[in-house]
Image 1 (cartoon, protein in one colour):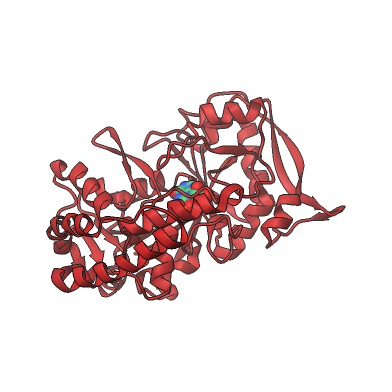
Image 2 (cartoon, protein in one colour):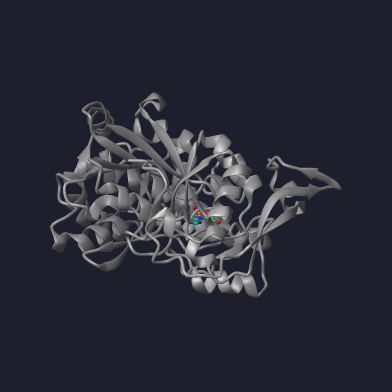
Length: 428
Ligand code: IMP
């Protein structure tokens, strides 16, 4: 029995979805605990790629219970769309998809307010996914949010939503000079969706604790990455939830002591979507090659991802924040054609060499990466399935990453296919 927390160590898009889906074959339950429809992971369902934003990645694996925990914010339209995508396959039925009563709803006015806020920020815009995530979490904190559990008593729910929506319309029209939302049509839409979602409602903390206690394997699936964490990321260029391991307890109702291991996922290079400092960002041919070979376009927004070299200063920081001992390195194959592979080992900041990740976005923006250059392996790793099949120079790259980061590499992913993984060590 094992409870595993899978966490992104970079700015998201590390390939957590693929790994969660892979390990789901050995799991009894997959739990999401933060974020919302800003996340996007492409998984293979019966051989066809399907993008999920809200459904946990293991939803396509028969027999696995999927839980959307209290820390997730749910856009009900998007969730029903995803359930409809997988329903013909007989999955996401009432008994294998549970939604915690305490999860908050992202409604139309959240998206409208976010669009108005991003517009008002002008050049200082965060570059959000426009999925209403920030305003939903802001309402939750301000105790103006609406929970999934409330939806079960629809009339009382509708009265409360109407009351809040009218105040939001005042904000939209008076503060932002934006269009108000149509409250009646929003409520009509919600009335239609409610019977699709309320059968999945559950008081999930006890169900998760029971699964973890009864010799089952439970995977907690992080969304986004540590550098986007609300408290420890590159604020304000972050998302509005705790994407690091600390987000687990408030997002699930499961105590931190229930977790056996936090496994960190890092790409063999690094990407970022949206604005904010990114010391190792590269805009030359190498970055273009990575973008092309790695298909680095956002799965939620389609935006091209900013690409750069592996940053082990940031990686060490993420490892420390999350208590990671083992890493899974993804997309190693994307570097197959690189003659040389720079790895950032420190920064130069105000004329000094620093090895600690700066806590301020402003300082990080001034940090100049100090690189060590590794020779590329210039051979195709995508068919490798055993450590002995990897080129020696790729092994040397991974060993150097271990040395610089202080964590061991348990596995590497070498392609999009579900089984394109080389294990050094089994995490589940
Ligand atoms: P928000 O989460 O939509 O508020 O966006 C805040 C920041 O997080 C923006 O820079 C987004 O691009 C980034 N972000 C949010 N979700 C993801 C994700 O799943 N992958 C990568 N970046 C993300």
